[in-house]
Amino acid sequence: MNYWPLIGIALVVLGFALRFNPLLVVAIAAIATGMLGGLDLVPVVEALGKAFNDNRYISITWIVLPVIGLLERYGLQQRARTLIENVRAATMGRLLLLYLIFRQATAALGLTSVAGHAQTVRPLVAPMAEAAAVKTHGELGEDEREQVLGMAAATDNVGLFFGEDIFVAIASILLIQGVFDSYGYELTPLQLSVWAIPTAICAFLIHGGRLLWFDRRLGPASGGTQP
Image (cartoon, rainbow, N blue to C red; front, side, top):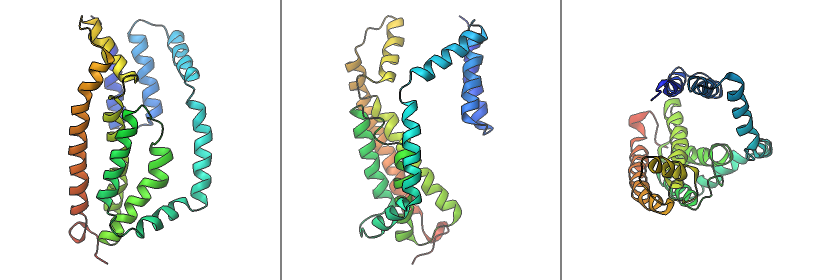
C-alpha cells in the first residue's frame, strides 16, 4: 500500500500548529496528497476547482456575510447582550447548554446549516454568553473573556460534529459505510446512525459538564470581580 498520501494529514496538523492560514494549509495539503497519490498537478487542481464549483453552498456565503455585517453595524450584538442581561436566571453555562441541545438536535435532523459560527455564534451566541458571564461574575479579564468566546465556538463544534452522524443521509455516515464495505462489512446507514446516538449522548454530557464547571470557575478567583 502507498502511505505517502498520508503526508497530507501531517501537513494539516503542522500548518494548524504553526497557525498558518487555514485555507492555504488545506489547499497545499490537498495538492500534496493528490500528487503523492499518483496524480499530476493539473488533474489535482481541476478536482479542487470542480468540487468548489459544484458546492452550491459557496454562493450562500456571499449573501449571509453582508447581511450579518449590516445587522452587527446596526447593533445586533448590543441587542443580544441587552436581552440576556434582562433574563434573571440566565448564566453562561445554562445559555451554552441550551445552544448545545439546539445544535445537536437540529444537526441530528440534517439541518447542519441552520446555525454556525458565522451566522449564529459570532453575532448572537458569543455576545450573549459574554453578557451572561459578566452579569453573573462581574467584569471579566481579557483571558476570561477569550475563554468564554472560545467556549461558545467549541459548543457549536461539539453539537454539530456529534449530532450530524445521527442523520442517515449525512456525508460522514456514507463515508463510514463505504470504508466498512471495502473491508467486507455490510452495514446500512441506519445501523451506523443508531450507533452514533450513544456517542452523541456522551458528548453532550461531557461538554455540558465542562460548560457548567467552567461557569462555576469564573469569578473573583479567575480574575473577575463580583458586582
